[in-house]
Length: 301
Image 1: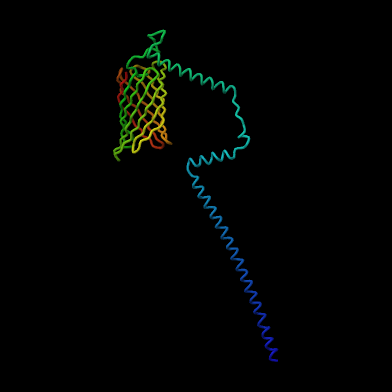
Image 2 (image 1 turned 60 degrees about the vertical axis):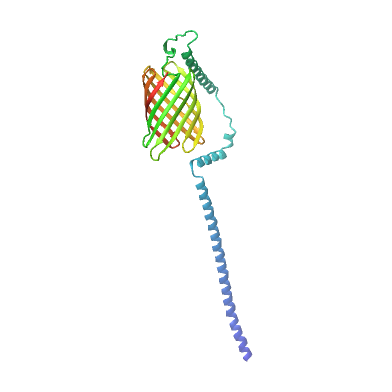
């Protein structure tokens, strides 16, 4: 009897224990699944966050005008359809004729100006007096001078910068040379910059009233350091009357990756050999401009 009771008690205790163990095992498996799912979600979020950070970093690296331009240019090349890539450009015969006509006209005008400058200095072979608009050049005239000196002062606006400027021009007929030196002086801080231009000039004379030059040479900039580069200019002088002339001198210079532009517009009034010169000047390098009125004296022969 005692053995039967013990057996019954053992069986009663075994079944609840098994049920309880099953429940515990099921709970453990659920927690494991939940942990695995949570870990997977965290991994996905980490990957998405990392990808987002990489995209953000790339976007920041692509910012800037030049980077944007390069990216757009590359995209245009990459997405261009094959029909555009392989399409041949056909030039109309009428367009070709128009371009040839313009080129011939420019060459003819170029030759007229060069020959005109030469004849106005040396005299025409068939008529040494050369009366009228193409008359022989007289000493002291402002157009195609043998030699000219210009001294001027510039007060740069919106700053405490002053500038003194000197320019020399010499030549014979269509061939000439020009040198210009400007010192920009700032009071606070006490510093200065020297800007120089040196050009060889082909001087085109269209009658005695108009001169157009094509100048090639170099630009020199000296401040804390000294740099130089290529330069090009188109000086224009119009003298409708003997006592007055109007000058416009656009000049461009390139130093490394920077462009310097120098524009000078002035009116010269005076007698032969001596004139007063007044006008305005703009000197620009990238986003910085030094501009202001100029006044000075011009001597020509």
